[in-house]
Length: 120
Image (cartoon, rainbow, N blue to C red; front, top):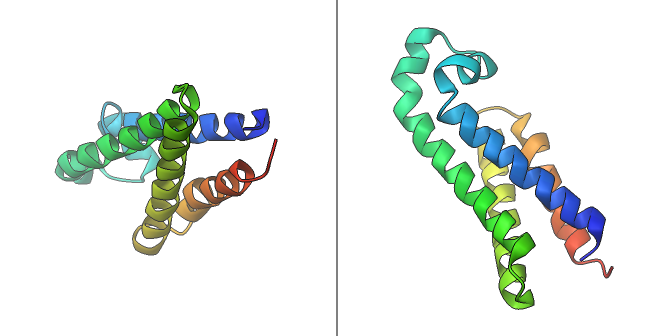
């Protein structure tokens, strides 16, 4: 796998760790501001967002495992699974929450999937 592809996958994983933090630990402060919510609305949404944050961490974990597991077949499975899930989650988020999610999640994941299949 080309270094540029590894870097892109690493950036996508890091973004999902950040999303996890925004939706869990930082939700009632920075996360609330990022999502444009009042304190009252954030309080109501906090449990659901925390759950969503966990899923973002699972996606990051799959990508990180894909980058570091030494077995090529296992690594490939984690990367393809992680990037595919990120792309689909981005499509769903763009359709149901905010269109900009398409550009922060789906586009980078699809680009990484394409780059992953280009021989190094």
